[in-house]
Image 1 (cartoon, one colour):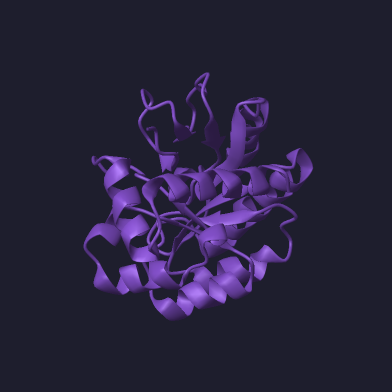
Image 2 (cartoon, one colour):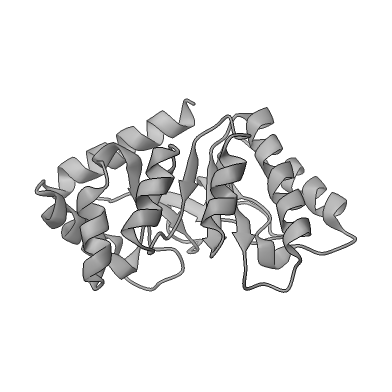
Length: 208
């Protein structure tokens, strides 16, 4: 059986959402497209948005990765401007957002009120309190490889409602089936039921 990979970087993997690298041409399969904080080019932001907006097709499932990152050498102010513009693009084209966030979760939460579409934090591996605060603000959480070996993250998965989660490989080299197996064990359901729920969640975020 094929298991849905919510966020990946493998162009030959067709069952999931491929993250398009900045400046690249989208594939014929499902993809997300956005301007990652590390890819912001000061002085060329308008051109970057031209690339983004001209590559939103029917196969584009989400806007992203986009968000805020305290570790990249782009000022917080510029990151926030680019993030807000992408929220407005998401609102306009009615597509959910896949968020990259490093040490800026409460700033991201403050921007959530401007978003009209579903917002998903990808690769979540932080503390329970942050997970709870994100869920209180109607974020979805997408979990990756770290769930296989982080006990505290496994507790967060146990406490995350099934209808608010996704699973992903991101840029890690492992089989998504391993992750489904571990999460189904943590949630006390079969991998098949888990996959069905993930696909239901996908329909929910696609339909607003």
